Length: 278
Image (cartoon, rainbow, N blue to C red):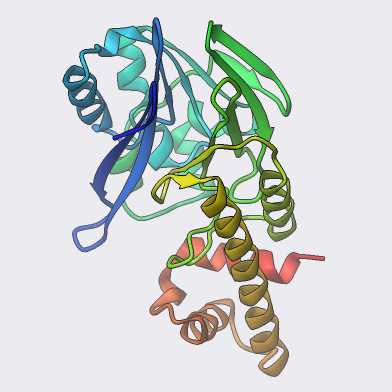
């Protein structure tokens, strides 16, 4: 789907387990050459290549992949795309650890189906930092925005010429349980992104593209969701201080309307982050 001239959203569907199906969005920016924001899971390169053929482009034209963070649904296709195109890979220093060593990532963040989602590490050619500006060609300049919270190495990329923000998973989606490692940094990221001026479109990895007005509403709703979750966690913990972490997750999930949360390692980490927040 074309978001605006030269910016395309590509949906990649995948299975986490036999019963759990998810999707993520990859974004393609076209000019004289092309670049990707994130790369989806292993096998996503086939979807990307097919989309590019449909619009008259070819994967060999990809000059760069900009990774918002190192989770499997964002880095899984990067090695294959790089092998086909010879492109550079950009990521934060924190994300580089897990991008270049997927075994380390699985050790530190084991999730179901990990090696199905990402089966090959990829080298990071350029590390990015907050407020870096990366010029690829006329009309394609990215500003890097530190977006920690969802993960330690999360960044967003602002396509300056068009006012298009690629935020990865920095903005929790209302119908999903939020995934974050640091609640306070997630809040700071939401505040910063929400205060950006001149953002015409926001392109998240888990949701449709937001126009300027909806973007503001989504940021506000995400802030409310995080407050509600923290209040719920603290209330349950206060009433039942002796319960285990898994029992706390299950009770919190039930109150929030999410079932079977005690077995979800990502939700357990979000619960822990709520208890750790200042």
